[in-house]
Image (tube, rainbow, N blue to C red; front, side):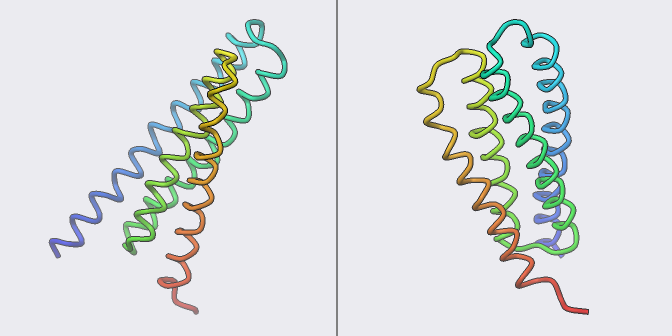
Length: 135
């Protein structure tokens, strides 16, 4: 019972993180659409929008991981949540910085975030293949 409580607390962290991440994605999206619209080039605005788009997608993935975790815990599911979180920070965060600062060197970070996203999806799939019972 103690182990279940400990894992549930960790999964709750993913749901809370997804809630915060979702709110940030909305705020950053609105900031890009309104404040940045006339401040950066159209190309950099597209970069920024890509960051927001992937931020949203993986916020939902993080929420999904947290909700699944209330019913089924596994190391691969936990890794999935951490990888989605890291991916949001590295991928979307680097695109936000790139768009706002124009420093191309920041783009070096972006692929690492993308790899985190891919690894997060792989971990989620591994969890499902091992833990979801067929009907």
